[in-house]
Image 1 (cartoon, rainbow, N blue to C red):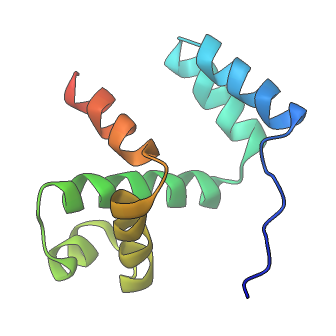
Image 2 (cartoon, helix red, strand yellow):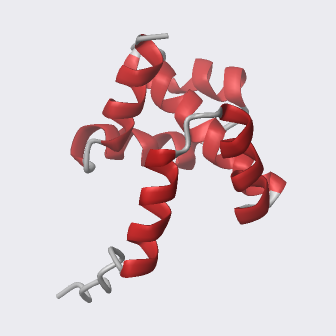
Length: 99
């Protein structure tokens, strides 16, 4: 039997969500990301969103690897989240589609 994961939705996470939901200036959000994450983490997170966008467009893994530099493992993980995740990528792609 798989071990149950600890609940990630804590008061601290809720505080972060409140801040992210409130900030509307892209420069302010980027400054927060720079303070919270390493450059590598920002790039990897952004890469996953790019992968989600390409998967949603029906692109094959090989084309996504070439376009983004993401590994097959990362692409598979994003694909799994698109199909069975909490819907976060879908909402993000919806936002990007409205630009």
